[in-house]
Amino acid sequence: MPEVKLHGVDFKKIKDSGQVFRMWEPEDGVFYINAIGRRLKIESKPHGVYVFHCPDEEYKRIWTPYFDLDTDYSHYLKCIRPEDDYLLRAVSCGLDMKILRQDPWETLVSFIISQRKNIPAIQKSIELLSKRFGERKDSENGEYYAFPTPEALANAALTDLRACSLGYRDEYVHLAARSVAGGELNLESLRFADSAELKDALTGLRGVGEKVANCVMLFGYHKLDAFPVDTWIRRVIDTEYGGDFPPESYKRYAGVLQQYIFYYARKMKGR
DNA sequence: TGCCAGGCTTCAC
DNA sequence: GTGAAGCATGGC
Image 1: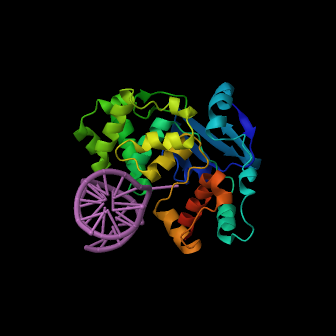
Image 2: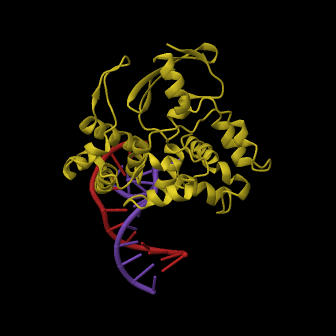
C-alpha cells in the first residue's frame, strides 16, 4: 500500500471542484472515489503524506495519471497577467487543484446530466443511475456500483432512466448510450483527435452543446484549452472582465484557469 | 415558496 | 447569427 509524500495536490479541493461527482469525504482527511471501474480510499497523514489503499502498481499506473500527480501546475500559471487581480485571487484560493483524467464515457454522461442541475442533484442522479444499471463490485475499500456501461444504458427502458431523476435528459443519455454501444461514436479513438475534431464529434450528440462538450474535453480528454462557460463563469466574465474572456495569451491553458475561477466564484458565494 | 442550477433544442426574426 | 421560450427536477 503506497504511502507517499505529495506536493501541489489538495484532494478536498478536487472533491469540491465540480469536475468529479463520485468522490466524497466521510471523515476529515479520508477520501473515497469511485472511478474507472475501481474504488479508492485515500487517507491523509501529517506533513503532506497520503496513504493510497491500493497496490503500488495501481497507484503508479492508474491513480498518478488520473489525479495528474506528476504535473507541476505553476507552469500553467505563468501566462497570468500581473494586473489580473481577480484571476490571481482565484488561483490563490484554488491552489493545488488538479484537472483529472476521467473516463470519457462517464464524463460525457455526467455532464449531459449536469445541465440545469446543481451539484448535489447531479451527484444524486449519478448514484441512482449507478445503483440501478452499474455492476455491483467488491473491493478492499468496500462494495460499490461501477458507473454503467454504454450497453447497460442503451438497453435500459426510458422510464427506468427517468426514475433516476434525469428529467428531460433521459432521452439524451439514452441516445448517447446507443450511439457509443452501437459503435457510431468511438470515444476511445477520439483520444487521438485534436480539439476541433473532438468537439465536432461530441456536439453531434443530441443534448450536447458547447458547454457540455468543453467539460468532456477538459475532464475526460485532458484538453486544457477547452473552456466551459456555465452560469458561474458567465457571471464572472460579465462582472469582472467586461464580457470578454479568455484573452489570447490565456487560451492554451484556459481550461485550467477556468477551473480556478469556477471554484473561487462558488466559494465566494457560499461565504 | 420562489429562484436557480457546470444548458440545450426549437423557433421566430 | 441572435434572442427568447420551454424544458423536469431538486437544492437552498
